[in-house]
Image 1 (tube, rainbow, N blue to C red):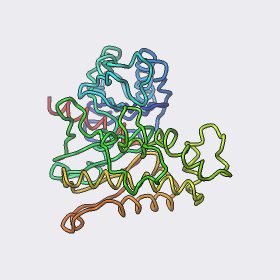
Image 2 (cartoon, rainbow, N blue to C red):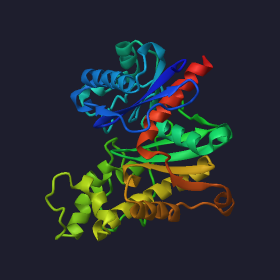
Image 3 (cartoon, rainbow, N blue to C red):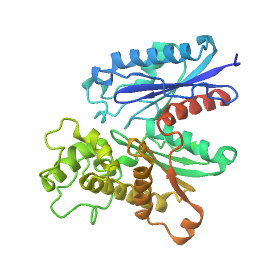
Amino acid sequence: MPEWVVVGLDNGGTSNNATVLDASGRFLVEQMLETPSLVKQGPEVAVNALAESLDNVLEQTVTARELVRAVGLDTPGPASADGVISAKGATNFLHPGWFGFDFRKALEDRIGLPVVYNNDGNAAALYTHHARFRAVAEQKSSVSAIVGTGLGGGVIVNGAVISGAAGMAGELGHVQIPLHGLLLEDHPLPQCNCGFVGDAESIASLTGIEKNLLPFFLTRYPDHELHGVEKGAKLLRSYAERQDPMALEIFEQQAIAIGRLFTIAANFTDPDAYFIGGGVVEAEPQFRQWFLDKVIENTLLREEQQKVATISLVEDLDMAGARGSALAARARVLSA
C-alpha cells in the first residue's frame, strides 16, 4: 500500500477522466477511467459528477480515501490561475451558472480535500513535458497545442507551468494568427466563441470545424456525403483517414494554423520542444503523421532553432490531462 497518493481529475465537455499517482511518482491507472462530466447541466451537477469520478477511481484502484493528500483538477479555459471560469464563460461552459464560477473552490468544498487547479492545456503540457524530458525536465522548456472542442495550450519553462498574472497564460487558442494564404479568397473571417476573429481556435478546433470550416467547404463540395449530416464535424477525421479530399483540405488548414501559432511561440519563448495533442492526432497512424508533417512544414524556425528544437506529439495523448493534474497536485504536496 502506498504511503500517500494524489488524484488527477481531467474535466471535459462530455467526460471526466481520472488517475491516481503515488508518493513515489508511479501512476496506478494505465487506461482511461471515464465518467460523464455533465457540464452542460451547470456547475452544481458538474461538481457532483467530479466527486463521483474521484470515488470511482479510488474504488477501481482499491485506494483508501484517507491516503489522498490532494486532488489536481484541470478544466478547459479561459479561467484564472485559481480556477475561476471566465466571466464570459467558455467553449464548454455556456450555461450561465458557469460565468465567473469558482470551480476549484466548489470542488474543494464538495470533497473536503485540497484542490490544485490548472487549465486542461497546461495540465497536458505539464505531463508531456515531464514524460519527454524526465530527469532534465527542470532544465527544459516547451510549448503545447491541444486540439479538442477548443484549442488549449501550455507553456512550460524550467519544468513549471507559466500561468501569468491572471492565470491565463498559455491560452494559445486565443492568439490571433496571420490569415493571409491560410483562408481561401471567398472564405468568411472565422469567428471564435470567445469573441475574437481569426484566432487559432477559430480554425484549429472541433468548434472551428463546426462553425467556420465545414459549412464553407461544403459549399465547395456540393455532392459531399456530409451534407445535412448531424454532427458531421465529428465524423470528419474518419473521412480524412480515408484520404477524402475535402476533409484533407480542412485539416490542412488546421495544421497551417498550428504551424503559424508555433512560429509565433518560437519568437516569444524559443522552446526546446513543441507538442501537438488532442483529438486531431488521436487517429490512424498515416493520417496522424501527415498532420504532424504539415504542422512542421508550416512552423518557420530559424536555422539555429531547427538544430535544437523538436516538434512531436503529446505523450500518452488522452491520458495527459489527468496525469498532468496529478503531477501538479503531487508537486504541491511535496513543496508543502
